[in-house]
Structure formats: C-alpha cells, structure tokens
Length: 267
Ligand SMILES: NC(=O)c1ccc[n+]([C@@H]2O[C@H](COP(=O)([O-])OP(=O)(O)OC[C@H]3O[C@@H](n4cnc5c(N)ncnc54)[C@H](O)[C@@H]3O)[C@@H](O)[C@H]2O)c1
Image (cartoon, rainbow, N blue to C red):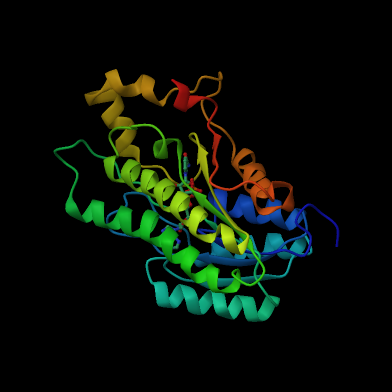
C-alpha cells in the first residue's frame, strides 16, 4: 500500500457526512485504515438534522472502495465509556492506532438574550468534552508508539465570532485543551494540533444564524467575511490540512493552530 499515510490507523468522529466524510475519503486515498464514529441521530437543541446510519454506511463504503479497512460504529462522543469501547474494538480489528481526528461538532445560534443553558450544555458537551473524550479514548493506544491528535476547532476558535457564543467558547476551549495536551504528551511523541476552518458548505446549517445576521445584526456580517475573495472553502481544503497533520510530514509539528480560513481571522 502506498500513500502519504499508508498503513496508518485513524479514528475519525463525526465521520458520517460533511467534513468528517471528506477526511475519511482523503485519508483512505492515501492508504489509511479507519475507525469511523458518528451519533447518526439528531439532537433537540440543534435546529438542523444530524447524520443518519445510512450516511455512516456510505462513508465506510467510500473508504472501502478506495482499499481502506473501515470499522464503523454509531456512538455519541459525549458517552466516554461507549466511545472508548468502540475505539478499543476498532483498534483490535485494525491491529493498532496511529491518529485520531476529533471532528464531531454542533452549532446553535442565538443572541446573548436568547441563548439557553440547554444550548450551552449541548454545544460544550459535544464540541469540547466530546473532543476530550475522543483524545482520551485514543491515547491509551498511542502512548507506547506515539501518534497524532487532530482536533477540529474553527475560525471561531481564534476570533470572537458572535451570535453563536457557546460554539465560539467551545472552539476556543479546544485550543486550550490541545495546547495543554501537546505539552503533556510530547514526551510520548504524541503531537496535538488544531485545525481552524472558515465556513464550509456542509449539513451544519442553522438557518436562524442567517436570519439573525440579515434581520437583527447586519452590522456583524462583515466579521464573517473572508479576506480571500471566496464565500466558502470546500471540505477537501480542510481534509488536506488534516492529512498533513496525520502524516509523518508533520512529525515535528505540535501545538499548531492550523488555519484553513481564507483569511477570515485576520479581518
Ligand atoms: N461547516 C463549517 O462551516 C465549519 C467551519 C468551521 C469548523 N467546522 C467544524 O467542522 C466539524 C465538522 O462539521 P461539518 O461542517 O462537517 O458539519 P456536519 O453537521 O455536516 O457534520 C458533523 C458530524 O458530526 C456528527 N455529530 C454531531 N454530534 C455528534 C456526537 N455527539 N457524537 C458523534 N457524532 C456527532 C453529526 O452527525 C455529523 O455527521 C465540526 O467540528 C464543526 O464545528 C465547521
């Protein structure tokens, strides 16, 4: 098997669709075997539907078609015990683990006076604690031989992106957690990096955010504008960054905030 990550075994959460599927396909193209995890169910606090079991099957099919061994599991990343069990099972089937991509995430929208405690809890639980759970499930398999943790943050993990404060806070939290882990785990040759995408067209579509920007706070719309003259990036652009961070090409890269943000954070 040839490729930039040939023979590497990689856990991806939120793998059923969107960027998670794109990461799976890109890593499979370059020779990785995969453990694919997704909740495959919607959440009441999230206004757009999440993925389905059929979506996860399709990601596994696409990876397999490319020659990858793919083990799929329906798991909520908020459930640390279930996630660890699924990862242990996948590792047993693939013979080890080399990297994890904590990609599962949700987005709620609201002004300061309409954001609820339930939204806060769900968003922080999935985006921040779920990322921690993913790292914690992967780490027992990485400490002996080293590896790479890739935690998906956002441009909103660097910039004070408004009208989705729990999301922005959770994505900043992912950066702090990743920096601390990068220090703690360097001794084991485990690298920990974050990826910061600008807007990408996926199923993560809270229509109310656009309503808020157009009807209530048009003054804030420029904060979402990229420096480069594009409205959105594509999933593949983010997957190429993930590929680099999983591969040995980045063997001395740790604690990096890898912006694939078309310059939105310098605005
Ligand atoms: N789309 C964007 O504009 C954008 C920009 C910056 C960062 N991001 C981040 O990229 C990552 C991928 O998002 P996407 O745009 O592909 O969105 P998406 O909604 O299409 O995909 C997210 C996936 O995560 C899964 N998921 C959600 N909650 C889960 C849970 N508790 N346990 C397991 N799986 C769960 C969903 O079912 C879905 O398949 C997220 O972390 C997101 O915050 C997205």
